[in-house]
Image (cartoon, rainbow, N blue to C red; front, side, top):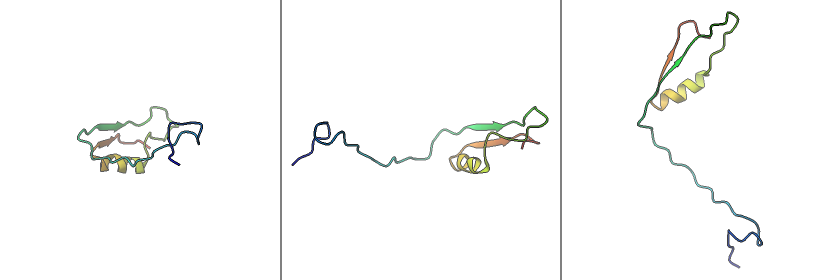
Length: 68
């Protein structure tokens, strides 16, 4: 029995999964992380792991002195 993926009376819709092949982006961004202006705030908007991923993809990260 052939299965028609568009025939919902048989078994419902059938999905087709494919791996996405990604190449290194030719566009690089300069990303700045400012320190907070509030006295009690010590957080920054990006984790060290996030910085590593962005740098590995060719982006530049600038962190303001005293941030975090």
